[in-house]
Length: 114
Image (cartoon, rainbow, N blue to C red):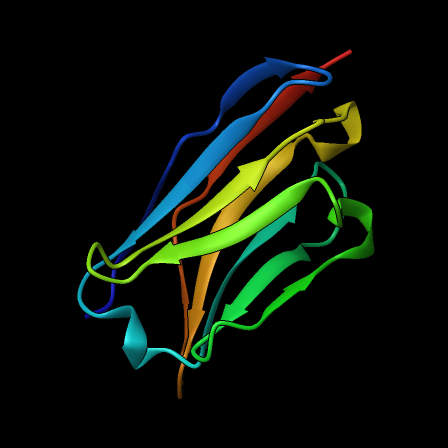
């Protein structure tokens, strides 16, 4: 059973920073990719950033240059460093992992005040 546990969300002023963590139960090399998605009220869940098993990354245009996804393999953890936060970044952020199946964390709230 795969578990993904997110942490690091919270309330921050516009222009501030937060770092989200996603701890996986077991080796993250089991997954083809891991990433972060977000869902704002009344909107569909959208991709924020991905990191593939080979280390390549992918970002949504809206966060390029501000967010960085990374991983710590010995700790089985993926991170999302979020800088220059904007009110429109406010959402529930979900960790995602994929191999033959899709796995989701429970989500962590990020609120950016103007």
